[in-house]
Length: 346
Image (tube, rainbow, N blue to C red; front, side, top):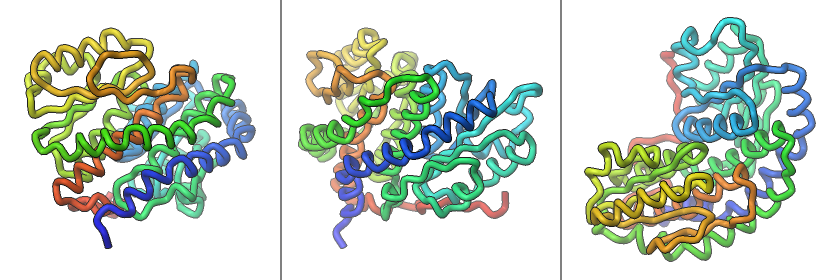
């Protein structure tokens, strides 16, 4: 079996799987809105583990942008430190995110939430038959997004799509622009695939830094994790302007600094990348703006901001995939990792 064949297929299958994810949400969108309206929570918790914790960070920011008080926590902290999270007198709802729907911390955190709080639990997963899906009040299950690879690619992005739709539905936003996202994914993979391969194969790059703010910080963390998991490369994620407060000491000719640029803060974020280039680092920008950056992944500029986080990721998944191959790693089976983490001693 050729190393990475499953990961490559899963990355390039995303346009079709994204269409499936949108259909999954549309099928139960009224039920979701009714469930949240009936519960009328004044605070929403979003949780996951690993990649899905990073996705929870993005989801919570999307919900806050929709006017909903939301915060993300690793499932282990919901389980082990509930007294610092469950504030008295608050009406809570929980959104759990898990590819397998069988991760120990997330399952037990959801069960503890139901026992202690009794609020609604909504699950986003890629396995409709999983324990998490069965026990939730409502489950959005994108079965076609399941993967043979250990590292998440299409599962993460498909669940991100559903969470974007959740926030838009609760905000009352027009979601028709979402139908364009599968085609946009297809365009990005083909238009910038060569760039991802060139950078991934460049052995003079020894350090990867992924920068993002607000809703894009969680996406930057996921891009960092993909690079680290698949290729065993030195990789870190930071809030964009925070990179200037110490970490930029690592910006040198052997570093690639990847900036996920938010439309609201494009000028100062691009300035960070410009400063890193002056320090000798190479940079790659991702966003929906005109730029003279030497390497840029151009996103569409006519989509609502809430609908674009997921588009920052596909080419960066390809970057990690190619880096893994050139590091002699198998991205289908990262070192020391398994697809489902079970901790029976919790």
